[in-house]
Image 1 (tube, rainbow, N blue to C red):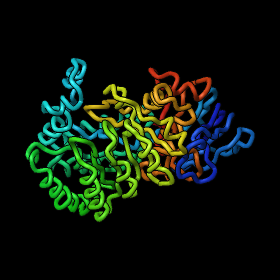
Image 2 (cartoon, rainbow, N blue to C red):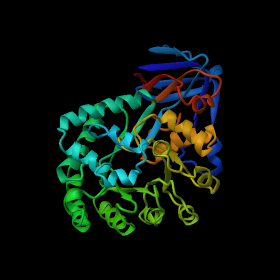
Image 3 (cartoon, rainbow, N blue to C red):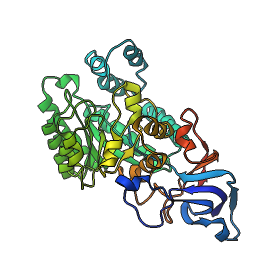
Length: 411
């Protein structure tokens, strides 16, 4: 079954040569073809080019994209969409002046979500999570990473990961799973962090590995949560179980976590709202992707990742939503792209690259999605009629998506 998209006003993120990720000045380069065609067959991109070279074949479906643009779907490399309930009461507390840390100290935050999740059945958790997944796909996300971390007990963490596995099995988009047992220290281990680390490493990780429930291991490396030494220990243990490292780091403080991530060959270091010169230098000439989460900065009112500094230093950069109930309750990558331009001073080209090919790399999917490349999945956004792709971040309150296609199939 072959589908032809014809008269595409502009085909965006066209890559004829393999691209792993983009760094520095190259992030401002966004190859496109104007007045283009695109052919999809058996869920894959098989051909594209200028309309003058459009094949005259008997296609199963022909879609006229006159006045509209096509780009690869967004690649969201950092989410927590498997959670129970919400934390809207904490939203009100924040409005009334409490900080993120004060809310956590009062029994809110991650521990609040963990308690609720522990009390929620696996099937109910799946039903809640599938609604969120369908929501983000409709908003143009065509690949997603999902973390555990709201369980904080052996059974609850495994329950979360089983839900992620079930989502993988039932939905057509690529989904990566991350074990984030080191998201917070449960109340019962409040005075025994060492005991919780032993539980993570000696009991949880072997079960995660045995049941093939995760691709990555993650740690919230932050004051009041897990130290740099804790992080090193967890990442090293994760590698022995085949779990590649990723880290939550530098959200509130810079304590050396970025360097720990680099040392352990982390695929990505995420958050990075607080970055010093040493942090930026440690990422030079590495394969670790810095990931910014502007939705979190917007919602919490904390600084934005200094993306301009990172890119100007020659580094790569990716964008993700951090979709979670406490600090970023939105999975809208269109808003993330807009916020990156408005608040982080990225150009539209940089933001689109950060949210597609670099986002794909940040979850190990750069060979599958993230660009218009022959042989990659036909996970595509067909825009409304727009003047230029600059309209995508410009119109921050209203996404410019007409239709989303996953493996060439219209949602």
